[in-house]
Amino acid sequence: MAGQLSQKDVAGSLFSFWADQFPLTVTTIYPGTRIETVSLAEWMELWIETWSRRPQRGTNKQVLELAVSVHCFVKQGLDKSRIHELADAVRSTIAQQTIAIRDNAMSGTPVTGYLMLTEPQTHELTRNNIGSLQHAMQHLVITCRGVAQQI
Image (cartoon, rainbow, N blue to C red):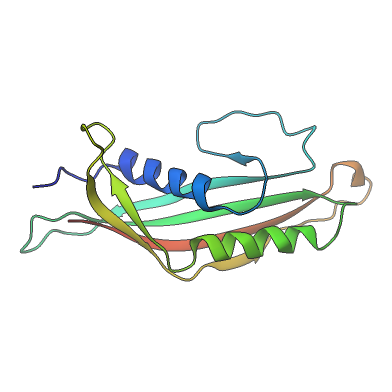
């Protein structure tokens, strides 16, 4: 029987999937990672914002619900369409995906479950501050709900 689902394994499997599947060359910042962004013209931040455990009525299999968010940042003054190119690539990478969850603590990294992602939503968070255009950024957030199911 497969081991218990852990948030660490779900997150690690999602981040590994992202690193393998995202089609563009853009710096991605993961939770807990510190990076200086002053010199970057664009970057993304991948977050798992919410976790909740569904009640396990009548079954031993764990089910975790979560929300994945990808924040896309592009400095203003660059190609105005670049932020939308990033957002389109994010959506095509995560929309309706099924990702194998692997237990990295066990030999052979067996699959212990699957993360199923839904359709993503995009939110525009760009704010223009008068007088501080040198630090102005375009900012889009793509959010996708998911369910991780133990097998």
